[in-house]
Structure formats: structure tokens, C-alpha cells
Image (tube, rainbow, N blue to C red; front, top):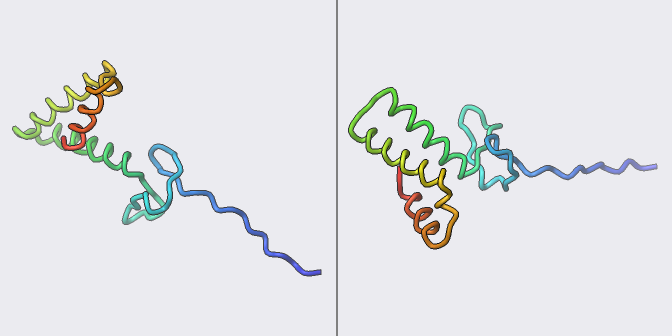
Length: 99
């Protein structure tokens, strides 16, 4: 009898933030912890959270501007405007370029 190699299918890597599966090339690995992979959407979200936290500890005129933008962004999301018609497409496009 010969032993056949048992091959288990490898699971697609998942984002440590949202838990969704992504191809390896779509994940950003953390330098000191290469086992941690974060998708692009979550990386952008984490950057925004880090910026808010930094702004809270070190207020500047720019941080106040970013705070105003975040307040407006939260109001749009709360009202669901980012999911409705042509205005939604415009708001999502603008959001790509905001800090």
C-alpha cells in the first residue's frame, strides 16, 4: 500500500478587523505582526480612527476642521443619504478625498 498525501484546501486569508476573506494581495500586513492582515476598507477606517484620537490629544486648527468634516460625515451616514440616488454617488466620491 502506498500512502497518498492528504491535501487540505487552504482557507483564504481573512481581515482581522471585519473578518471577511480576501486574496493575500488585497491585505496589508503589519510589520511587527505579519500574521495580522487588514483589508483596504478597514485600513482606511483605522487611519480615520487614529487621526481622530490624535486630534483629541493635540488640538490644532486642522484638527478642528477634520472634526467638522467628521461631524458632517456622521450626520450623512445617520440619515442614510450615502445610500440614496445620485446624491449618494456624489457623497461617496467626495468622501474618498476627505481626511
